[in-house]
Length: 251
Image 1 (cartoon, rainbow, N blue to C red):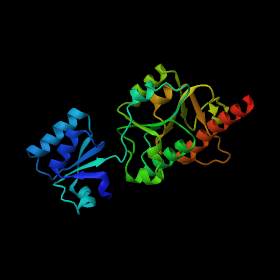
Image 2 (image 1 turned 135 degrees about the vertical axis):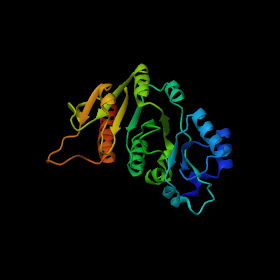
Image 3 (image 1 turned 90 degrees about the vertical axis):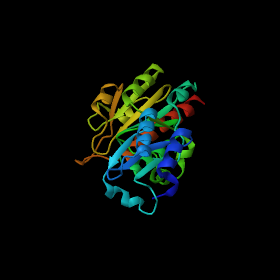
Image 4 (image 1 turned 180 degrees about the vertical axis):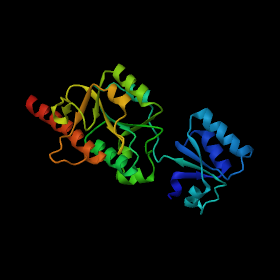
């Protein structure tokens, strides 16, 4: 466990929440921990700040046995998340973003961020729940790319999609049962958000219903599907190919 990506000890966690200088992904509280005044203060502060906290079996804390954790660990992000409204207020002509909907493997999250950076995308949006958060594994898998793109954490993907639409974004969801092939969409001359779903669950039905396009990657053999990070790479680089071709044609 990377010591730089956790805060341990009740007083340290309280100070970290109050200062607001560290982005806290989640607070883990051992079920065997006595709920004293400090623990209760952490719970109250987490609720007031909208920080996720979770009671976990004491066995979970064997990962942190080398630290004097007092039964409470705060998992922190190696990056500062960007505010969605601030991002939307930055009026570039057209923007491209990736939305992760339930991608639970941090290696996949890191790989998608790395691809998005290489392709010149502007942001990666991920929900605060039921999705891998940016941690040391994501940072390593992205090869440091997390420092070169806006990472936005939101409480509700549904409301985020609605907000993107109000800012003239087209919503494109990837799904194996999609109506259109991914290369039949015109990615040029518009702002768009590409939704990639979880490894087992795919894009949620609610978010599919909110999408303007649902695209698939054609499979030439009767095989399940591509890994989500591979699928994201294929679609992202099709949008890059189209933009480069458009630029070439305009010369």
